[in-house]
Amino acid sequence: MKVYKSSRLLLYLFTTLLMSVVIGFMANKQYRYIYNAIPLYLSYLLIVYYEEKEIISITNLTKFLIILVSILHLAFGQYFNLYEISRYFDKGLHLIGGFTVSLFLYQVLVSILGNYLNSRLLIFILISSVGITAGVFLEISEFVLDILFKASNQKSLIDTNLDLIFNVFGSSIVAFRVSRKY
Image 1 (cartoon, rainbow, N blue to C red):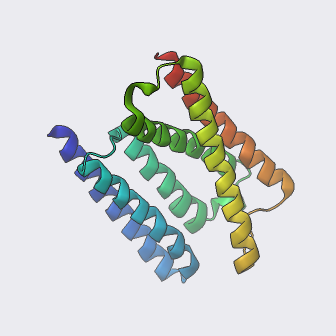
Image 2 (cartoon, rainbow, N blue to C red):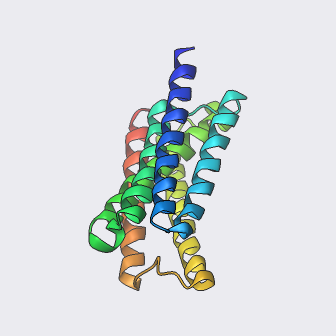
């Protein structure tokens, strides 16, 4: 029951932080960033829903990392404009984000597949591949948003390639750590 309470606490924390960021976006007339907050929050609600239905099992650490990456992206990256100000913020966020997404997807796969994941090599390949693929889809999404909305999520080919490299690093760290446990 303690896990359930801490999971609820994380949901309340995320809701409070996200509402604060959205209010800040509205106060600064940064309405376009609110559209980033909505799918992040709905995705988190889906995680909580599926976990309560006992379809998946996600650790509180992973949920905390999801919240951290979301708030870093919305509050620090967009609200405080660190994507433009800092040369390193985006790369660090891709590293942490790649790590978090890989860890989350691994836990989803373990919830679904159970004991079929019994080889260190298979686990390493699976986790790194899923995390890297998620990073590729993120970059494709940024490209599509740039085309559709004349945004500038992708600054250059170097920026995109470095984002992909840091996603690979983050995914590989999780793959290495998890596969060593077996």
